[in-house]
Amino acid sequence: MALIVDAVSYAVSVTSLLLIRTPEPRPQPAAKRHALTELRDGLRWVLRDRILRALALIGFCCNFSMVTVWTMFLLYGTQDLHLPSATLGGIFATASVGGLIGAVISRRVIKRFPLGRVYLVAQSALLLGPTLIVTAAGPQPVMIGMFVLSFFTTSLGLGVAGVIIVSLRQTSTPQSMMGRMTAVFRTLLFGGGALGGLSTGLLAGQLGAKGALTAAAIGSASVVIGLIVSPVSRLHALPTAPKETAAAHVPHAGQRSSSAHR
Image (cartoon, rainbow, N blue to C red):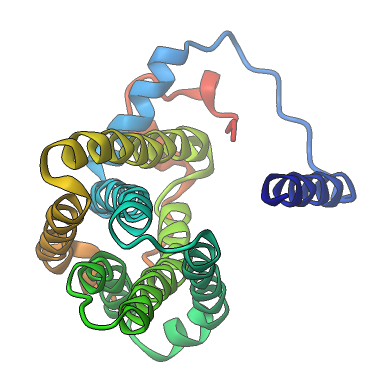
C-alpha cells in the first residue's frame, strides 16, 4: 500500500509538470560536443572556485552521512529495538515535516541573519543530528522522542541549507557553465549517498547496528570542523554573479559548448 501511494505521488508530479506552459527559448544549434571534455570543464570550474569547491565537499559528506545513518537506523530500530513498522514510519515522517518547515522559514532567516552564519548553523544541525540517535537512552518512549528530534533537526537544517546552497551555486556560475556545474554536483552528491549505503553494510557487519551508528555519528560530527573553516560560513550575502565571459578562462569551454544543458 505504501508503494502504491508513493507511485500515485509520482503520477501527480508528472501531471503537474505537464501542466506547465511557460515558453522556453530553443537552444541555439551548436557544433559537435564532447562529453568527456565538458565533464572535465565542469569539474575544473567547481574545483577552482573556493565557494563551489567547499559546497561540493561538504555536500558529499552530508549525503554520505544521511544515507548511512538513515539506512543503519532501520537495522537498529528493527533488529535491536524491535520497533513496529508504524513507529519507524512515524519517525521518518518527522523528517519530511522538518524539511518542509526549513524550506518555508529559510527566506526569512536568510534576510535577518548573515548568509554564512545561517549556512553554518543549518549544516551543523544536519551533521550533529545523528548524535541524538546514539545517545538516546531510557524508556522506549523517551528514546523514540530523541529519534524524532534527531530526524526533525537533520531535515530542518537540510531544508534551510538547501536554499542557500542552490542559490550560491547559481550565482557563482555563468549560464554557459550551469549544466556542467550541476552535473558535477549531482555526481558528487549521489556518489556520496551511494558510498554511504555501501558503508552501511560494511560497518554493520563489523560493529553491529548500534556500533555502526555510533561510528557514523562521530564521522558526521567531525565534518563540522571543515564547515567552520569553510569560506561559505564567512559570507555575509550572496556573491556577485560572474559575467558570462568568465567561463572563457576554462579550457575547452568556448563558444561551441556555450549552450547550457541542464
